[in-house]
Image: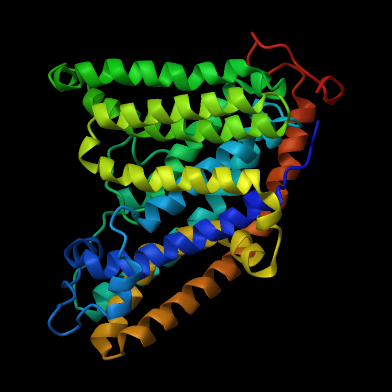
Length: 392
């Protein structure tokens, strides 16, 4: 069995996904959704007559069916589904969660803090009041709580981390199946899909039941389960890579899960945004091609660099970049100057967060995850048999 946790093609795709998300936000959303960006920053909307959209921005976004932000997020989800099972071979459920918490939370805390600083600079520049309550800010510092507590998103990207966290919990609960490369793991997305169909049918009535937040919990379940099902497509590729599934069965499974993902989206409360499905289909096509022709996605310096800083760049660049772009353009800088400057600043900040926060906390997470695994003699769930490395 192959035991490497780094697969070059997946690492290259991670760097490509990071670039796609930045392009989407800086060279798309900021210009094409001016009112939404202004509302998010709580500053005046960028006036189109004073600062028209550059021609190269329109050229980059000439394919309306493909949203590069959705495309990048979809790639990140597939990559997570593919690589996360590698971590489960050497850890138990508790150790895995410790590892993941230290992998996700400290870097997000650093990135979110930079986002708040940039928003603060924006409201100060435009002489606007601070828009967020302290309670909502503190809740954001613990990814996984905000959606459950019904707090509006401040940075616009935390929702993807919350879905990742739920996927991690699911993997930890059923770690025994993953350790054995058991096909039973694919029962999980099917259960999520069936339950989603039930929730969809009863969602209009849940709001009338006198239980606090029941309707909100149902809505959050519909969002999370939809994308977790998509992440399990990456798990199918992992099983194919490990030789656990034949190619024909893996293709059938990938097609079946994507059909569940699409039907879930179409029948659920987020159906008005289903046009984004094309971006997820394109991401799946990209991942499938890279998996099949890995020699074309070999390690290289550029994509390795962006892969290394991909997570810090993801949590740093968004709303913080919008704020800096808005200030720069109002100050009188040209569009290309503002975009180039903010892009460089975002990459530099991401690199600093990677070196100063992500790398040391990731090492700490690996160390503590192994320690927790070594000290826990019982499996994370009593119903699963514990497997040592010799059994894997």
